[in-house]
Amino acid sequence: MTLNRKETPSVTRDAAIRITMMPRDTNAHGTVFGGIILSYIDVAGGVEAVRHTKHERFVTVAMKEVIFHEPVFIGDLVSFYAKTVNVGSTSITIHVDVEAERFGNQGQKVKVTSAEVTFVAINQSREKVKIGR
Image 1: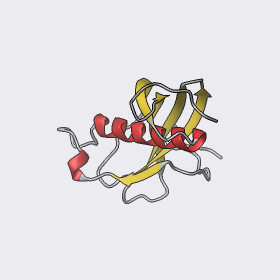
Image 2 (image 1 turned 45 degrees about the vertical axis):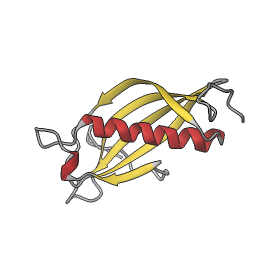
Image 3 (image 1 turned 180 degrees about the vertical axis):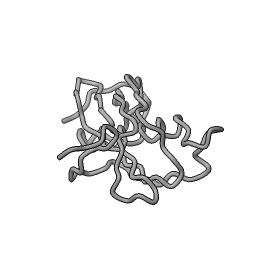
């Protein structure tokens, strides 16, 4: 399969979240604001942390190596794919790939962002706790 550098292969996988970008999500340049993408990366990572460990409370402690590969536009259907990279005694690291299906060009999927997020497990008192597995 030959792909354009900007396209990603169609792989059957489960998105942690999927959302259509709207005009309210844009910056002054007319593309989706990077902070919007970062907030959804955080949510997707949290979904994966809970799915992987069954622990219910996590807080974000770090976002590492965030790379914005391509812009996201109004109307793009954006999918956030999360995968557990490492589980420690109190923390979990998640890699998130973000892919946009271009509006008006269904089927054209472009890798737009990737990031690594680290979460720490907490209890109801917001104290760090060990992750139960």
